[in-house]
Image (cartoon, rainbow, N blue to C red):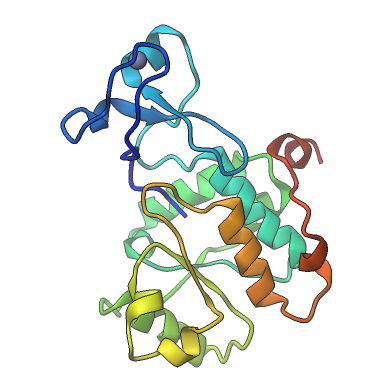
Amino acid sequence: MLPHGPLVYQICPHCSLEASDASAKTFVHLEEEGDSLAQVCKSCADSKNIRYNQGKNQFPRRCLVALEHILTHSNCNCEIVLSSTWRVESRYIEIVMNQFRGSNLPNLQAVAEKVMKTTSVENHSIRQHEIMEYVNEHKIENWVALDDDNSIVDDPRFAKQFEFHAVLTNAQVGLTRKNGQKAIVFLFPHSALHQNFCYVPATAAASA
Ligand SMILES: [Zn+2]
């Protein structure tokens, strides 16, 4: 769910600086809601005191809200299992937990109360295989993989098993509300919930 850095190029609305490969690193993601992805150049953000995601390990608010929404629709019967390189070091897990804790989103805060589960820390193969190993080992029937690793949709080995279980995110954008909606449909295919999909805006969720 974590974007790998602001690489979605555009023109800064404040100073008209044009992002290119060379200057892309001077752009930052703004703290935005929904699926919008606003960026400005870092110097404008700093000089105008515009709030943006500090550091590359900071989850954008919209990603946290999208994840919260999946948990809300599951009536909190969902468990989050961390995959990827994030799972192998306790300090990375702590980064995730701290953001859940400070999110003011009740379901994510509840997740942060428990010990974060992870896929096998021994398995450093292909992401799809890593996730499949966990699913098989724990005999999980209802699951969804939220990942920006193409193997979850591309790798032929467990392609059949991942059909209707894979939500591929954009590495530069992270988890979006649209991704969340797809995950809910996969998790609850027979539920009427998703037919009237309603999105809880960040502000409403935060005050709930
Ligand atoms: Zn600018």
